[in-house]
Amino acid sequence: MSRFLKSGLLCAGAALVALPAIAQSSGLGRAALPEEVAAWDIDIRPDGAGLPDGSGDVWTGEELYEAQCAHCHGTFGEGMGSWPMLAGGQGSLTHEHPQKTIGSYWPYLSTVWDYVNRAMPYGAAQSLTPDEVYAITAYLMYLNDLVDDDFELSRDNFGDIRLPNEDGFYLDDRVALEWPVFTQAPCMSDCKPDVQVTMRAAVLDVTPDDPTADARRAQARAMAAASGGGDAAASTPEVEPDEEASAAHSPELIAQGESLYRACRSCHQVGDGARNSVGPVLNGILGRVAGRVEGFRYSPALTGAGDAGLIWTEDTVSDFIADPRGYLPRNRMSYAGLRDADERRALVAYLSTYSE
Image (cartoon, rainbow, N blue to C red):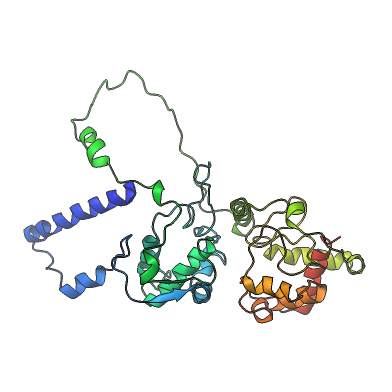
């Protein structure tokens, strides 16, 4: 348990002890009814004590997440605006600007389950059923590469789960080490010969000026670093470029596609130095077998389609981005789809410039 969590529990406990005395002396309040106590007694301990019966799988959790959570936390847990990231950040805790997510920082899965159950979704807290909480928790684990897409979470296997940063927390020792220091009589004069500023607090830019540009680029860089993807040359298999198709597109159409591609940049990178991020690099996509970018973890649905002979051409890419889930059920791409055929043609024209 972290020092801060433990400290909060100590403070809360002290407050609860003091409340009856205050009520008796002031004539306020009454004893809580058993059903009122039960309504608040919903905490889940790290060993799983307190969990209700139920279960939920990754795919069900994905559907619930998209409906209940993605508008604040992003399609892939990357965060939206000032809403926090939930996925990524592994290995960043020692960096100047660490990314504290479920996969990189949180100590126990019980914290995830309890928070989702107690406080989410925003504005409709405690509206989820236990099965739905299990499913969303399973999907959050999947987003953090902790489980595979066929995983199902339940009370029976909950205690087997260990988050990566569990050992990074320790018991609060302030009662033994700091309490004696701060309960002594305070020094009021001549306490130090001189005072020097030795450290300054970091600026926490939690409200980006342009969340659709600066924040999304920063999140894309963070997710790329967390993915450990290689450079574009190492990540993209050699393919036959579709030079005739690329040459047939007008500069105006390509420019329109570049503008449309802005909606894709938070997940997919192109150009020199492109890396796998939330989605694979798209350099050389035209003419490539589906699900074949080295170093990227695809869904079984997409790798299976590649095994069955799916090749990314202008037509198949257009059909796919029109309705990713309808075109290839159970793939991981959560994009709703680009319905306008002319816009799809422009977007594919832009991608074709990176297939030369």
